[in-house]
Image (cartoon, rainbow, N blue to C red; front, top):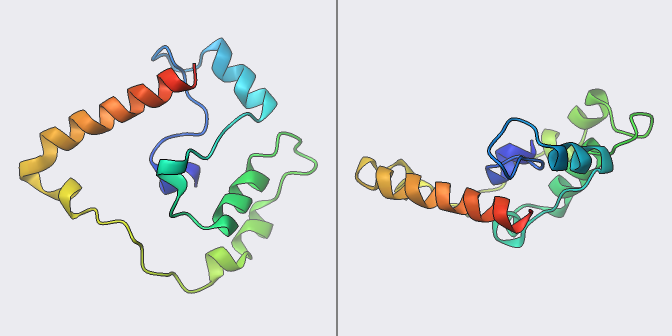
Length: 112
């Protein structure tokens, strides 16, 4: 769900590998963020659900049964303020690919 809402995972390796020691540490500590640029249009309710899903302690983590009953999942979907048409335009594909790769690289460096 985190990836669907912002485009990248809450935990990732800064070295390009599958799982780094730093990434394992962040997972075990439940250390993640909601960077403002990517999350500014995401509702507080969605962020709250993600926080509950990423709770480290399995005894207090929410279950799928709890999640699918949340009004965020069962309610009316508001219009999204995101215009993805430029990303889907074949003429802009290469530029978007470069920009997304650069943004992902910058995010990894910022979290290092």
